[in-house]
Image (cartoon, rainbow, N blue to C red):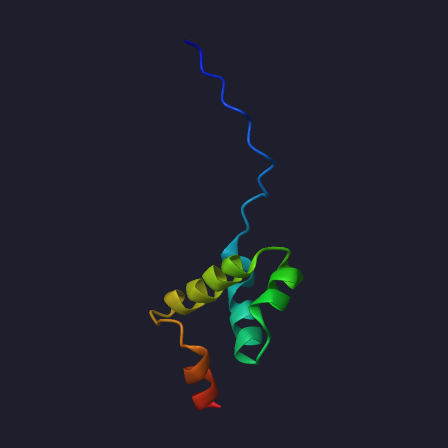
Length: 73
């Protein structure tokens, strides 16, 4: 029996997190929302999350919580 799978919708080209991770982290630390950053970079908030995590992982650090960011200010 031949199985014909429906073709999926268009997938966006994979964003290179490295290109905007550092800037996204800086703006996020300055208080920019992940939703606003997602609009800026043309991606989703979870992708912005990954970019921020990527920026921290490059330094061998983990992402601070919003509260930790507030306390650091």
